[in-house]
Image (cartoon, rainbow, N blue to C red):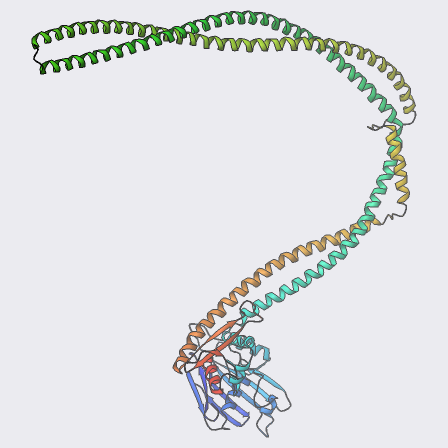
Length: 619
């Protein structure tokens, strides 16, 4: 704090062992040794606390100074030059030195300042450029320009007011994660370059396509012109032999037709003989099946007659049985009524004064006579019923046999009818075929006579045309008529007249532009593949950057909340716009004494709250 002191903290092992200031600001000469851990420099205002910190930063290559715009203004009043020297610790740690290129335990880094504006660095007494110093410090994970590593007076307010995006970049540089962002941005830069080059190649390809299209058209016309010239020469020779070939083909067709017709005539003769045999065989089958059909019809009539008789007799037997059953039931009913009457008579006699023995005897005699008559009648009826039942069973058996015989006859009759129809169809078809074949044989004979006469005439004409064609040159085989060849000759001559403007250079120009176009296509394909690879690389690097950044913020948040909790405050550090590395940033949220955490800004929080939140974040 201003007027109180400054704090220099180093994690073990310590990087800077000693600071030597010569003619630097208020210091004429000073040596300040530093120890491991936290080093606190105290003193009143103007005692040189900030000057010590500024000297360390200048020696480490920092370009920002809060005390002056030019480094020469930091030279002690009345002196021409100043020097700041840092003794760096280079002892072995885990078997390896922090600066392995120097085989010594201490490395001296000096920055010299001159009033005339000349500044230079020395490393172990050897002058080196600033870039080499920055690269050396970068290898040690130190950035003197990063306000999270070296925070001068009033820089807490500056850090609180910077944009979330710049705040995230400062944090990345401070923890050494800026390489992840650099990797993403470098991949994006390469992607933009590839896209720009691809667009340029696409434009070149489009222009080359238009030019190539023009010369392709001219080249194709040139090739067509050459082809038509050759075609014209060929047509002139083809025409001489076209009529000869036409007559040869016509004569060949006539001979082929004659051979074919003679073959058809021979085939018709053979068919005639075959169908005559079929007709004769079908006629014999018709006679045989018709006779068999008559026999089956007679057997069918006999079976149907037997079935009718059996059914009639069966109905009569059923009626007889029904009558017998009725008589039996009636007899039983009369016997029952008789028994009831006798019983009733007995009962009345038992109540009167008449001699009962005489009446009972009469009743017994009547009862005995009636029983004998009933039993005789019942036995007769039972005999008639058994006879009727036997007759019914016999009739059923005969009826079943007759029906089975009729079914078999009907099936056999159906098969005979089918065979008869087939034989009839074959017979009719044979008669029709015989008539048609007779007519065909007659027509074939007439046609053969006509073709033989025509072939003789064509042979005479061919002999004359061949003599005329041989006088014009060697034979040219063709499959077209003379009219077709003449039509093409006129057409080719007309097209050649329209191609008089075609240049012979078209072929050379077309081949040259074809080569250029192919090269551009190959380049475009290569750029598409590179674009795909770089896009995958951008995505992978973006994923890695987001992973390490989120992990860093998780660690920071844990410690940040712990520190705030000691001050009766709550808060968090949030990553915004994580999907866009250019727009990504970090927002610091804080709330004191139970207040809801809000985004850190000068309008919501007091100066002390902002400083507390920033320091908690830095720690």
